[in-house]
Image 1 (cartoon, helix red, strand yellow):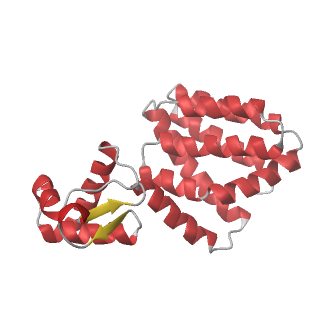
Image 2 (image 1 turned 30 degrees about the vertical axis):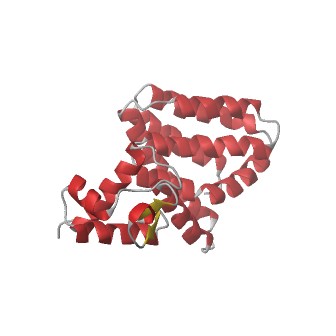
Length: 221
């Protein structure tokens, strides 16, 4: 079965929000204008806005004039991340579940980031920040951001949102791993290897580097 029309409209509205640089509090065009611009029926626009409202992306206003239309209440990617984080927060995740999820996500993300020669500026920034960290918590903050940046560099917004939603679980277990190792600097060669593989456009090495890093950080698994 093909994608329902309103689902395509959701994607177009989200893309418009991102392209136009809209921020929280900004108003979207009315249903009629959106329908004309997107060349779809008003019913499809209306259904798409209902879904976006249920996700907390927009708040619909009833009436006419300047107060009519939908108001942006959060960025699309933020709303999805928050929704996933809420779901994960209600679950009691075991360490092996988090690491298995990370292994699947980060291997795929690192491979795609390397294959596409993604921008590695954020990876380099967090790599440098890890070198300056003075506590396990500070190190892990940038360590976690580094791994989220890998997902971001893959170019897949859903993969990135899932990884960000796992951030709290990843951070908690990462602090324990660093404390167990005793010296965070022992993980630096792993991060450098991942960074170089992505920067140099080597998908196979990127996958191997991520796999070896997680095995190093969590040897019991």
